[in-house]
Length: 272
Length: 299
Image (cartoon, rainbow over the protein chains, first blue to last red):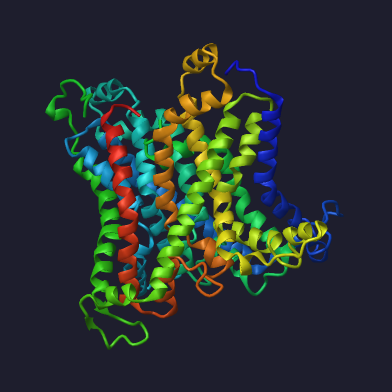
């Protein structure tokens, strides 16, 4: 690490910045532990008798579990499917490049730069005709499409660093393509697969455009459920905060773990 | 490829077509074909409430946007939102990155706190800001204003766009900071030491060494953020619903209203074509840069 002398004023400033940036989240968490009356008390209370009442109420409402499950299915399902499609694709491009490989990769990345509004209308109509609206698996499919470029890219960048000789040796020993991927490549690719999966789960969990437009009561994930607090129940702040807190906590933790991979995954190697 | 692997016997080459085909097929079916269909719909009259009455109308949908002041308001709002958020996040991101480039006790924890807003679901951050911070009666800002002897302000009613900008900037500053920090960490220590020895002060060091080094990083931040910010939707949906009036109606929100509020598929599709054009202007430059880096060897 750098041996530069750090002035204490700058350190203080960094702590201050951290406190300010985190404050809204802190305030949300605090409100989640308040009663409804405490939540809107004036002056706002920093110290109060904490209660699990609001969290309990948010969790035991019959539909919260269902929405949470929808979030889990759409995030994990889409991530699994994306990995299933991306591992062979990234393997092929990293180890057996052709003159067209680079164009293919760039094209995949370009699909990620298409604004969702550019395709929402036909996708909505197709979903309607297939009776896929309000179906959590269909939502997971759209999330797979959304995250596939990021997952392919993350894996590709990592696979390129894996020595070709390992593959070569396995191949000479008569391993099939599938064996080569499963027995040789995957065991050394744990970190890459983990970071691609983390990134994909985070992006899918927080996604709100597709979920708002393609799901209703049955298949809606937490993002849509939490959005319902914008009107009807908007003034039950403690309950809203408790529900929001549980909705963001899993991804907040994953985000903390994935902060390094985030840069690599979302910039497609434009920043080294 | 500049570093093509040495002589590979043809027989050892797997048929990569079948390895790539599923991924490519999925992307074609769910991104390229729908976009072609969007273009198709943009030339047609099609209202979901009145589906019998449909047909080819030429450029009428585009014309109706271009002659509608609402469209121009939405375009202007989009540009104001993207431009303001870019300015704020890049500036703050730069300052934060420089702060967190230093080594100090507790840095990892502090950095983790700083980047947290980026991982908060957009709907949740809209609700936090709209209710608990900016609410004119029970919000924290109102209480602070009162303590300072000011009238509480109904932020989302009186300064709607500024409030959205603040909210979105809070979420995207960590992204800018993380990217810039990565760029900074590839800066050579020797160069900075040399500048120190030559008597450069902190400002000169920042202005003449750090900033030029970061030029590429910053352009990537600006371009990627632009692409992502052009699609901002959930924050507006959950806080102002595009209002008051049209004050926070952006292009994506307008298209959403046309499609799922008025069910005017053709008109919405024409708007979507404009949105894609807007995003592509930026995307072309990003893709060119990514392509250059791919060619330039390992990343």
